[in-house]
Length: 192
Image 1 (cartoon, rainbow, N blue to C red):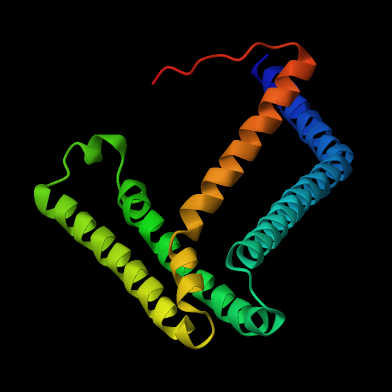
Image 2: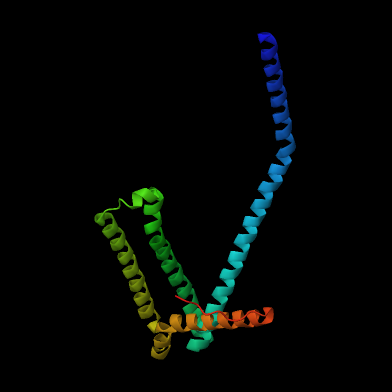
């Protein structure tokens, strides 16, 4: 009796292994297609992100050219410097984002409760040091542009970011309200 049970279990096991191998073989193609599909989805997302980034960059260039009334000669000198300036600032912004992220990734939620004031102070010091670095880079850029831009254009450039953001926000709100009217939605008041 014992022999029959062991033989039956062995047969079931060997049949199960054969079934697993068949399942693996059958699903291998499915797995590869899902992997490729995910790769293409990720590539499309990146492509869309890159496309949005290019559109944003084009819009900023258009706004700057219009707001500052740049001549062709000024634009030729200004925009390469401006792109390099923005890349430097973006690198620092990534560092700022990583300050808190690194601490959180190192620890669990329970460990966050155990953070000391020294650790928090260190994070704050790093954050403010990087913010000061951004301000210094922006000031250096302004002084560097005095050979390219007029004093009026520099003054307009200093306040450009805030005006551009306000314009973009108002454009988005206009688009949203038009879309909502088209869909028959009423405007909801935000409470916060």
